[in-house]
Length: 550
Image (cartoon, rainbow, N blue to C red; front, side, top):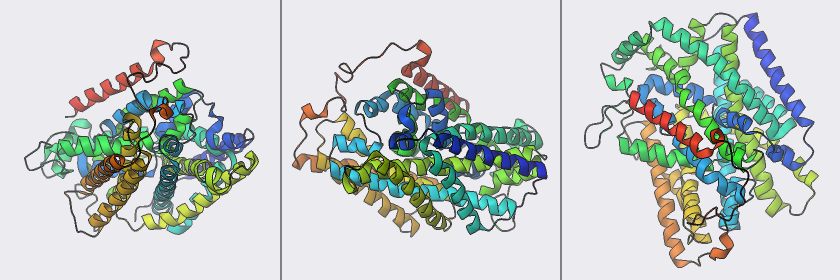
């Protein structure tokens, strides 16, 4: 088993990080006087803070270990998760969808479905999100426990409980504010750990030229491992490592999975909703898009180096698994002190992933389930205490879902499967509700329910080998496509036979040719803060990167 041997200096750096995070939680507690302070950070944060928190909330366990593992297993094609599977959807969220969220004056993503459809759709979305949040938090806890066990020798289950307790302390104290400011700190800590590791790894392998030739050798002479789009044509035997054609990549990952996650997953959208106004909320995902474009350099490259140094890396037997790519390089290449920073960066990434899901879970359960249906008309202090209790309950449940995650060989594929089940159908319901004013309330409910069920059934069919695909990644594309398509079809069918909404009741929450003309206009933003310009710049850079690595 892979083991690191951190020095006293490395341990001191890790302790300093823990103290800093706890300090943020205790400092944030002083500003928590209402449920809105605890659950929504008072909706008063600047765009640069919410933007960094937005990208950091996604830099969890699967992002760091999982994308490095995918880099080692699938090569450069892993960049699709960023340049196709993230940035376009983040731009769409900032330019198109955030105005809907702000103008509907909702406090959460499920609450928007209450405004647009009905209470039944609201409850269904809230319950679906709550289940997905604890499952995803469990994935991050499990990954953190793996690192504690593999690197420091801590028992797996002890590691899960200790990690959960730590997150509980600082999220339970300061709520969303402590989560967001903690994520900003974690963003810089993560980069401080990964950038030196990446540089040292490339130098160790002999530079980028030697890295390329050794990767081709590791992939048995298949040079598509160094390209994003090579071998993805339709109608030919797919030669790319992920076994997918460009239609599956663009529609399965780039549209259904990506837009479903980035535009409707409240763990992300909550960061934008905590911004001080609509302008800051729109800029939140757009600011986050720029570092997201560059993060592959510090996640995928270490995975490529790992397989270049040992072509049998991740193949089992006496060889390390793909998930060991970054920890293995850390132990081999980093000196004392720098190793401590890298270990701290890993811990920071896992904490960010757990905190993002738990802080969004307590908001949804409190505002979307307890307040409107279970405990109506209570005092604000009641909901504040309820939010804290939900935080505790969410962490406890996440401990058990972490044990569930331990039964899956590839946690990245497991996580993408969760997104395909929960996020893909929600996105289908959202786009029909936002862009087709005739979508009925019961159509939205029936479509969402059918989409989630069909996604879960497809997942089980793959897990039991009734169906199979070229790779686990491609399976998740198919699962997402099925859930999305079923949601759309069922919504259209049920809408045709149920009462349609009165257009006068939809106001400014459904797109029309006159959308936004009657909305309140604030002062004109300086050119460098305008959402269309920020989003266009991110898309342009993404296009250039796709061309360079095609």
